[in-house]
Amino acid sequence: MSVTEAEPTTDDKIRCDACPVMCYIKPGALGACDRYANVEGNLVRVDPHVMLSRIIAKGGEVVPFAEAPEWSGGILNQDETFVTAIGAGTTYPDYKPAPFIVSAEVDGVDMVTVVTEGIFSYCGVKIKIDTDRFLGPETNAVRVDGEMVGHVTTAEYGSQMLSLGGVKHLTGGSKKEGRVTCDTLLALCNGKAVEMAVDGGEKLIVQAGKPPVVNGVTEERMRVGCGSATIGIFAKQWQDKVDDVVVVDDHITGVLSEHQAGKFLGIPSTGIKIKGRRSTPGRYFQVAEPGTGWGGTNISDPLAILGPFDPKTARAIAVLDWEMSTIGDPLADFGWMLTYWPDPTDRASGGVIASMQAAEGWLTRREMIDRYERRTGLAMRDFPFYQAFALFKLAIIMEGSYARFVLGQADDPVFAASKQRVPLLADAAWAVCNAAPKS
Image (tube, rainbow, N blue to C red; front, side, top):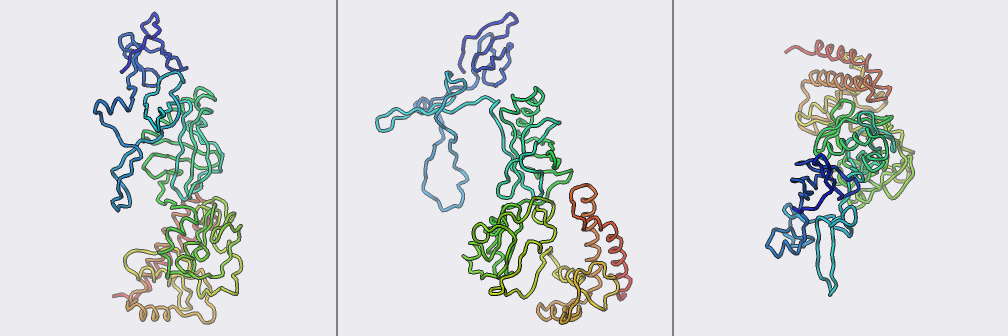
């Protein structure tokens, strides 16, 4: 704690000259910076100036900086802590002593490094929002209580990014804009929830360590990265499971068989072609725009981004729409697939969900069941149960999609048709139950 003579006033307040704000501080109170206080008429700095050499000389506790201990073999060093952000500069304003000073002699030269201490009007925060949802166009304003406190900035590795604060919003606009911006930054940095809205975009509730709430819906999905990064992360898991993988992204769309990760694993080329600008192998730009479709893009039909296959290398024997899978009874997944499978004997569902047309050479549903049972050793004895379960399940999913459409959280016209399709699905499921053999 250091004491400085201060300019007195007639009402026992003192004038602090530590920075250009020049606060008037009443007895027992702190200035706006929380560093200087009025203690019995004296201007007192309440956080100390620290000189590392004096702390060491007095046997005080210090934290080693950039020390390189012998590697223990662990992936992460959980216990190590070190000082960061020490750079050449002084406190603000420049003639005031810095709060942390490191001095040393290097090759006969005295070296002094101090922490740069800036006033709050220059502060800002960058918010990384892990969501698959498009929040708003880049550069559009972000508002809190109607005041602009920042803007949408460039997405990074699949996450939406907001840039908030800075001198323009803290001091360059109206007093209300400055106060709201300051309150927003303090609340966010202290782990509190803040409601905000993006011009031409979504309404958000953002809080450190919590999933974002977008238009009143808590997000359950987190983007692990752009299409290229996702390929790199999951390539090993996909190996020998699929011929190829395309990860749709509004920034970089990735193709497994072309990507460096796929080549490293020896995954052969499939001859697939992407409609977009090829960057480096397996990475494509300008494939899609942000939206509410696949991968947070404007793509509702993933086949729309595919060009003609290269006939010299194409070897695809099937097209797999990997929509979902479940943990538990494998027959639930098989029953889900069979419910979509067109079959001339199928009357209960009335073609409500058939998305394919049977062609010459297709197996019947009974033949599919026989093959599945031979390959897996599992018996599909109660198909009506799994069919009814699949129909009810799809009705619930489509009802949720329709709710998103009504709330303005999705713009796919397919969702609008759910208003008529959901009751038909429920009726079809009930018909399957009534037609099933009674046991």
